[in-house]
Amino acid sequence: MSSQYEVLGKAPGAEDLKNLSSEDIHLTIKNLNAGYGKMEILHNFDLFVSKAQSLCLIGPNGAGKSTILHSIYGFTNIFSGKIEIDGKEITNLTPAEKLKSVGIAYILQDNSVFPDMTVEENLLMGGFIKDKTEESYQEAEKILDKYERLRNRRNQPAKVLSGGERRLLEISRALVMKPSVLLVDEPSIGLEPRYIDMVFEILGDLQKNEKKTIILVEQNAKKGLEFSDIGYVLVSGQTAIAGRGDDLLKNDDVGRLFLGG
Ligand SMILES: Nc1ncnc2c1ncn2[C@@H]1O[C@H](COP(=O)(O)OP(=O)(O)O)[C@@H](O)[C@H]1O
Ligand SMILES: [Mg+2]
Image (cartoon, rainbow, N blue to C red; front, side, top):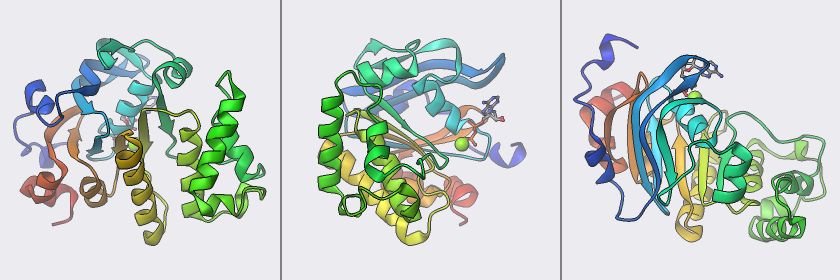
């Protein structure tokens, strides 16, 4: 992770990052130091994102991108710093509490569909944590109404789905809990190109029409930055460059290091 990234400019400060979101910031990370066991991976990390905005984290392998999502969701050790939703501190809530009370959903990087359960049963698994299962049924029904690809196979085992349909099911399952924030780790990984576009269309619809806040990690930096309002380039647990997605696509350092240009 050494010399080639040293050229990356002076790290942006909290004010620079704040200026990339609108007035009403939905999720805030302030001066976070977090990691696994005693090992600190994220150093004085800040993040600001508004309601219905999308933010993409790019950067080399091992930079700590997934660790940011894990920290928001509650899978890491937080040594210091704060995470807030609408100004309310949530740093130490459990993942279940975050899902239930503040609406943060985490969409797993690896294949997490249950192959022998039907599409509908998989969807309902997303609501297992909710008290009112009736509400989960209603949400599942809304999702099936919306996505024909899932509706047509609602009673078939999930293993019959294509790669793209499985990813759609993974995303939809998180929606059963009606989250306001979606944490999405590498949605394009392992997908054929035609499905990658489908997945980004679905995420775009959720952002624009359902006002979800989306924080995304993406190896495919071009796709991720094209999709997102905001991009952060993470290097060794710190943000080296941040900007509007469009601007980062034109940034020479980003181009050379991450866009193969
Ligand atoms: N569960 C874990 N336990 C211990 N170390 C981990 C764990 N997950 C990731 N790490 C370490 O944290 C660092 C950042 O990893 P990660 O956030 O997955 O990077 P990225 O997503 O940017 O590729 C790496 O050095 C990795 O080995
Ligand atoms: Mg990762």
